[in-house]
Image (cartoon, helix red, strand yellow):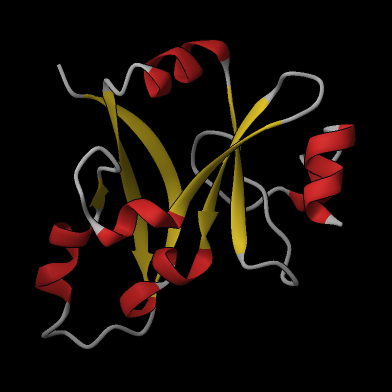
Length: 124
């Protein structure tokens, strides 16, 4: 159903599905296991040229004090590298030509963190 809303109707990214974020568009619902991030034309061009990485800014949730120092090492995800994390992002292009990134929640919530913002970071 969610894929149909995205692919056929472009109707999933509505205010009621918007996730709490600092900056950017980020959508989800409790009953699905991924976040949806619409791509604008500039982001899409960068994505297709593989000239960007993704920076995940996360809030800690009930993380023991001894785990917090390693947070900085898992904030970056670069699907250009051959990492298992690369499979946690999927690009979907709708029938109307709009593009979205689908980000798996299991990756985003690893070690008790939640994503609050996703940014494109230039690899140049």
